[in-house]
Image (cartoon, rainbow over all chains, first blue to last red; front, side, top):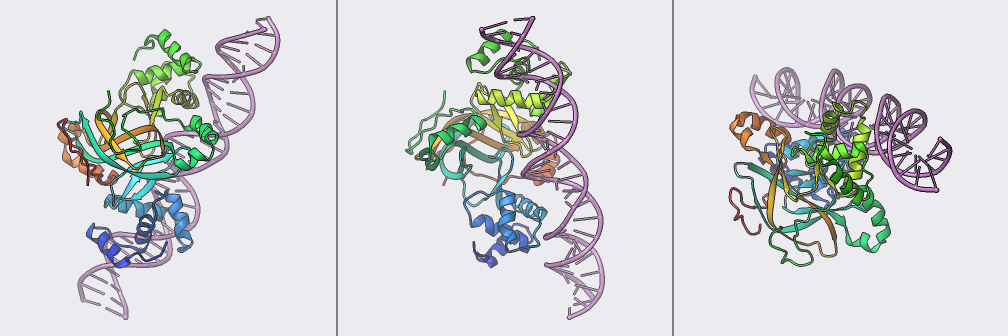
Length: 171
Length: 171
DNA sequence: TTACGATTTTAGAATTATTCTAAAGATGTA
DNA sequence: TACATCTTTAGAATAATTCTAAAATCGTAA
């Protein structure tokens, strides 16, 4: 991950959102922009520590809080024990593999709901869980064993899969 | 919340899912069936403690783990710091008010996606965040103040609201 | 450039939800 | 009733996140 990813423009972007473009904030934002791994705060900390030996964990949390408040970064609560972060530049659903833990993006092509009359909806998250193609191939056993430990139940919204014409509406 | 909610049938339900219907498990399950508040483990613990003075937190966690593994209960990761639990008998989306913290159910009427070819999807969660009608009325100020602290960014899937004909597809 | 007030970073302690551990208790079966 | 197994319990352990107070940095005005 290169240090500079049009640092000048990023600075302006932060400033335009009312966030002072401190070095740490820029580096954290760059880190998120340069990966699709939806890292945890700890991963970001470890990743940047090599370049910034004085970095502290609190600084990473501070920087993330500032970026989240400015809506440049979005928090994923898909993981049970820790939060993950995503540069909020594209809209998408998130799939987490329960075997390897990886989080994958996917496209939500249509979405309708009912029963939130009078509510102000400010953000929407879609989290799927299951098994990714690699882990399906690499031994269903391994998958099964963790499946029991982390099963989340099924939630048959009954959308389709493997093609873009999914089902209409559940129940 | 009455102690008995056809205890006999619940016992059978647990047994049929391979879960031994211990007293604690039944009470935890009953507690979840008797509320729509999507309580945390701590809330369940406090709620049952009045009736079961010897109850320990670990027992609540153990019981929840057993019920979740049997797919009778579903875990919500909608909250940043703690998990919430939902008797998994109906399928629905979850809306959390960022002012009062309450979680509301709503109906997902249609849902389509793309880009998970080869993935095995085992569960789907939809989490919305925003402000509930009561908190909108009860002072936009109060809402605003917590809004900045817990803002999650917007995620314009661009579904509709206030009517059942929502938009088609984003971007 | 220098000085000053405000903001940010830092290290480590504090907090807190959850898990672990080992012992005691309960349950089912022979 | 006796034994093996599973469940419950209290408290310690774990780990992600937040808090705290001091040091460093930044932005601006003289």
